[in-house]
Amino acid sequence: MAQHNELGKKGEQLAIDLLIKKGYTILDKNWRYLKAEIDIIAQKGEILAVVEVKTRSSDYFGNPQDFVNPKKIKLLVTAIDEYVQSKNLDVEVRFDIIAIIKNKHKTTIEHLENAFYHF
Image (cartoon, rainbow, N blue to C red; front, side, top):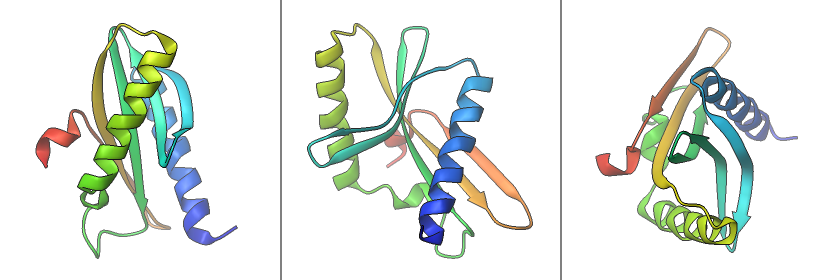
């Protein structure tokens, strides 16, 4: 497996662990619809959190969250609309980013709630 894929998988597990610790229930991971893939779908109360996980080994080229572009956001919105309708859910949808920088020296994790409003 390519090293960046391994880093991504580790990052997703760190994100899941963080969400569980914060009281979220993980409903799905790596959920696909058309060309979109949602890393994590989690729920806490009436909030359905659509979580994009960005893991990098350094912030040399920018913060991990800076790599979620408008095209990706549009795909995520389309996918979660399908998810909510197919599951007949009555929830408030929120888009989060969990930004992780993990290297051999340290790991930093930042959970950005309502992240798409920052773009």
